[in-house]
Image (tube, rainbow over all chains, first blue to last red; front, side, top):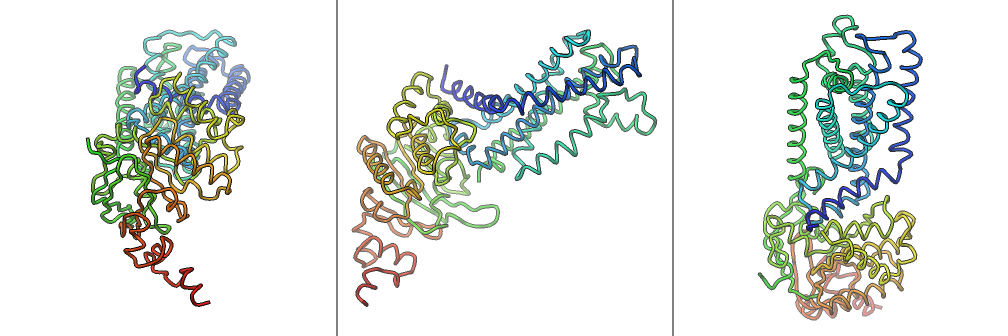
Length: 255
Length: 255
């Protein structure tokens, strides 16, 4: 391995090591939460709702839950990790190393991505054991999951870099992300909503992400897949470009 | 390549708040020197160190580490520098051994070399028994040892020690002095900041006084005493900060 490869592998290993050391909190809790959602919405509500758009209700919900677990875990890992290291001052050890802004950004990004992927993967495995979960369009599902994970990893990095206290991170997660995810159609179809809420849902970017993942699993979507993929790719690339610029300028990282 | 280990020219650092921490600092430390930078709190010592190691971005001026521009060629410049900062900026999630291993990884050191170097430095700094302990459980003195060991991990040519003996007991201070002298004799250039003037006098070849963001005097202890027309380095320091009335020789003369 070259020096640059060793450096990047170590930066990434540090991020993975952090969440693996507190896996009850970083992996166990999100899994339990997802299991509770499946139990409540699938087993309890599912007996009343039966089907949505010809799909068993619990199967309709699970793709959204997988997307939700991937996104929230990717986000919260990166935002917390960066803010904690800023508080401890430990980030100075990485900032004073020869690592480039791109190496630092990618290492932080992939840390959260890995955590999101593990939780989403375990959710998929558990859900597959409980219900018959199809994978209808794997060529849409894999890039969509990758883009969703990468997007929220980037958003976590941006929030962590900008944050000056833990309240700043909690604010974004509690008052921005959670409402957008819950109102983005994880548990229902937007077509069931009365106006103006159905139209308003179309202004929620997470609605399109949920539909992409749902299409990948069960082959049903309320939006254009091609346009959604294009918009998500553009948004992810834009966020990455912003973060790279912030890391290059040392914004709130270097004095 | 220049013979200087550290060459600083007209360095200015203005923070966004408008505070000018460095006001045109020029300084040269020769390869192999043991150099002390002395000055009151807030004089600009840490800012100068942060600009050299990439933790702060200079407003203007030039910094070269062994001929490598610290801004344009930051990879090579930082590779040559080891920093033991004033703050105990250790990662709470890591063990003692991981702290050293990860640091060396950030500097691109291969695994086998990291393992050998970690073992060697754990032994040198009497940390072997603590190697598997989480860093947050260490005493202040142990943390100070760890920070110094971490700075040495990648075998830097220029070691920057920002108040390394602040708050440590007599025994550890003497231990650290012996170690610093030894590695300096082995060829490592050392830049030391300290508030213990006898430390600078005993260990260092040359001394610079910094006050209000400017280098106001530079030379050997004797040269500085002569320049300020006083008997010793402490009185020269007091003359620098304008507190001659605190001079012990004057107080004794009055008594």
